[in-house]
Length: 369
Image (cartoon, rainbow, N blue to C red; front, side, top):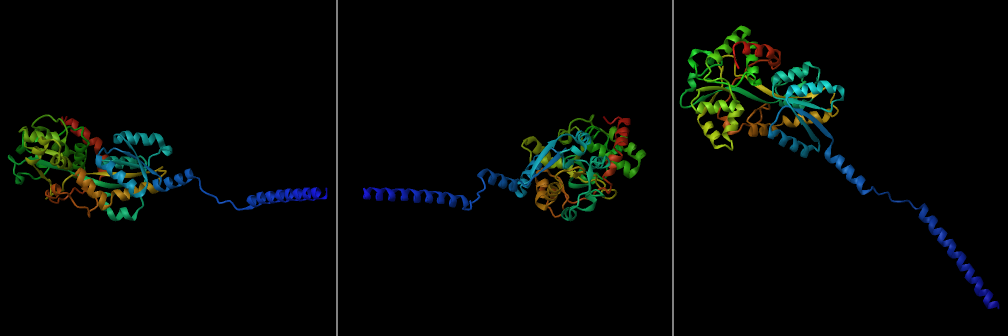
């Protein structure tokens, strides 16, 4: 009996000690510091935030493949996503006015200095502050208040038949309006913003009366009524319809590398002449970017402009779209280098917008269809 009681006592003691140890283990686990691990999904989010680096929203009237390529490369380099809305410039300006301070837009990009100035006058833009941009882009290719920055330029040149016209026969825009070129001149419609801005520049330089006289001379010398785009004028030269045409330079560059064999043949038979080299210079227009007044991603927007004005991006602009770079360090592709250098007009791009209504009015008065 004593042995039984002794064994029972030992059994109870073991049970009590076991319970104590179990309780002690639980308390120790409770008090032990827990290693905090970031959940996998949180880690992914943090990585993505660092990778994307935010965004920049672009309203653009430019519709060129090279722009999309440059935006993608900018995203790869910076992690900043570029969201693009494309439309005609007047439509984008009206949209920006409607949206006001609630606009998602950060940048407005278009292809005409007059329209860029219109956006400025409408109070849609704000100054762009960047030493990098100031170094890359000459003052004459920036707004006086830096509310827009030039990205590229294109020249309005005289294109001629190599078989029927000698370069020394060419001289100025004004000369094209003389009887010398009767029934030999080709140009697109007065609806073309390119022609309107050329006309506006002549109003700024020579006044309304002389500009109207010039426009009348152009109409008198037309080989046919205006039709088609700039490339259609070059095709008409080779077809023998006319001998000379007013065109934007970059269209000639595009024809040199066209997938259409006929356009390459056209390119081989035409020459490029920069008019008014001894007088007022060749008319140029500009593609540029304006920083939206109510931009929510101002820093990213400035970074995008900085990238687009680097030598690397500028050389892509010119290699892919045959536009002249605003960054003078950028090299020209061979076809453009062969054209040689030229003196541009010294006209404030703002005048293109200022005189546009009068330019349209005068062109209509002389029957420039």
